Image 1 (cartoon, rainbow, N blue to C red):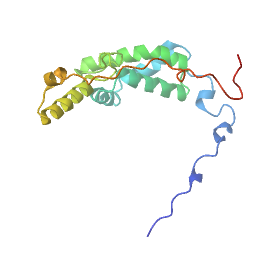
Image 2 (cartoon, rainbow, N blue to C red):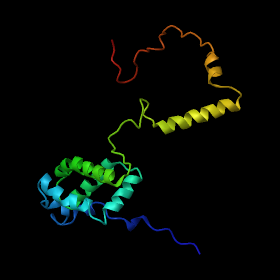
Image 3 (spheres, one colour):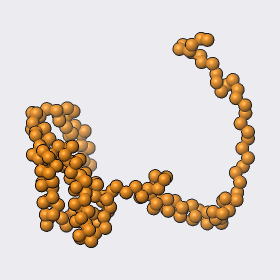
Image 4 (cartoon, rainbow, N blue to C red):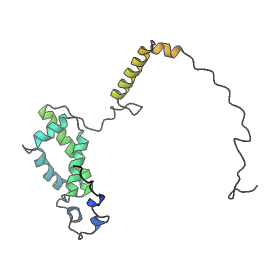
Length: 180
């Protein structure tokens, strides 16, 4: 038997987020930790917690950049009302260095997330460029050619561009055109 489609009215009412009393949300109250030092006293014990550290190391092994992990941690802390956004931004470099230290101690390769060597001047990763080159080589091979044959072929002659005509710069017409 076919189920009826769910109506689109299951979502929140527009403006509903503006109706709770002021101060009912964690980020609307004063932060628990006002300084960078206080925020670090909150984060560092959690980074070395025996239940959290292995999960953090597994995340680093998957190749997720440390900057991404630290950013998620500080945004979550700001949303929970632990600290302000600016304190979170100041804590991030310390969190990144702490996670790098943990990864080095565990013998795990990690990505900082600050390297731009993943992308060349083109803005594409090296693996993407290699895949495209491989596809081009296979297409040329299927046609019985190689890259040197392609370079020897000349482009067909293009006709010369005509002189500029009055049609290229027509006089403005219409209701809003100015008269000279």
